[in-house]
Image (cartoon, rainbow, N blue to C red; front, side, top):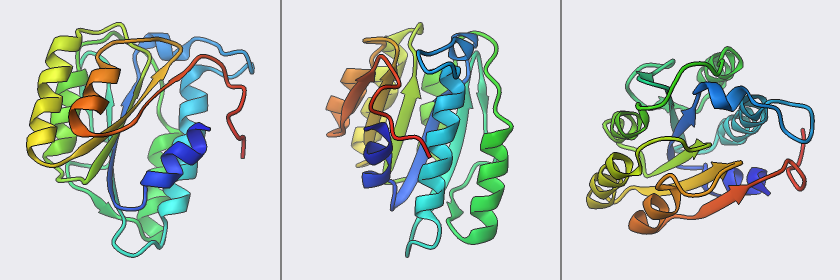
Length: 178
């Protein structure tokens, strides 16, 4: 499941790159929007990280640009900062276009994570994203990508280049709900 995929890796220095373009407000088979499903699972990952020794997290959102709702450094996954993360995640809305995906990845790399979880539904230029993944690989950062209701978009490549995992989700079936 996506939940176990996020949970299995997200006990380290983790950055989360989340697509907030308008297509993420599309509905899913469960009646939730794509972004609602993502927010639920990201919140679960943050709750799992809370209190884990050495765990830190950062969040970057992208549409045509990049938004850093928690600032440009990783935060310690203690109770109060995870609470701030959960509030930020709760406020995420999907609207706008694409174009900020590579800049989003580069913004997360500046935070010096061990791993980046890159989640989106495509519709962007894969070339610039793959180039940014090359930078990640040179820094020893692993990218785990999840293609949401799409294929491609450079998501398989960025995982492969960095030794990470790639998954495609085309339904919410099999996703554990909280």
